[in-house]
Image (cartoon, rainbow, N blue to C red; front, side, top):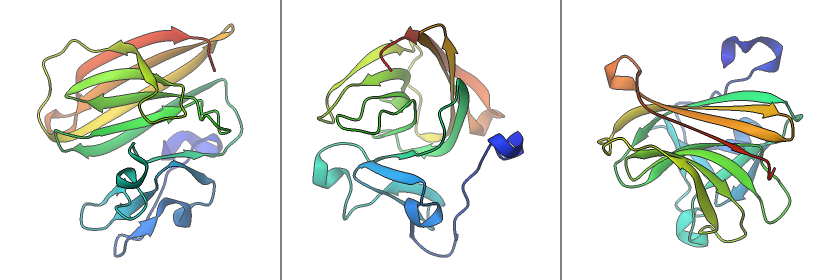
Length: 177
């Protein structure tokens, strides 16, 4: 992402202290809960004081940038084997906050359409059929391309401990956003 030139971006944090996502870049807007950089894990986590345990759902944020006809979003993270890691694209910022998400949850990769307003208001567009993966470091690559009036969505799960070998891949086409 950082090598993408003027149209790309990457996030950097002060690795010595906890820091809210919006403190690193004010273009990030909280959607549910809040995200905070945890220096001990060197990763973004849900804020225990304002996150999922308060609103009964996941911690989400979206970056307010100009709309694009295609994007590739990459997240590297530790999956603990119980929760989820994911990346959103094409977010409707006004309530009820509709969005597409590529997520590693329950050991499988999925493409989700979230229709809100409750955290449980979502449905799978596609889910991988791989054996559930174990806890570990993974990369989720989410590609969105505009195709006529619909989005062509592709998600890839890669195992960081195995030279980023592809573990699962799913795709779907949807026109709701």
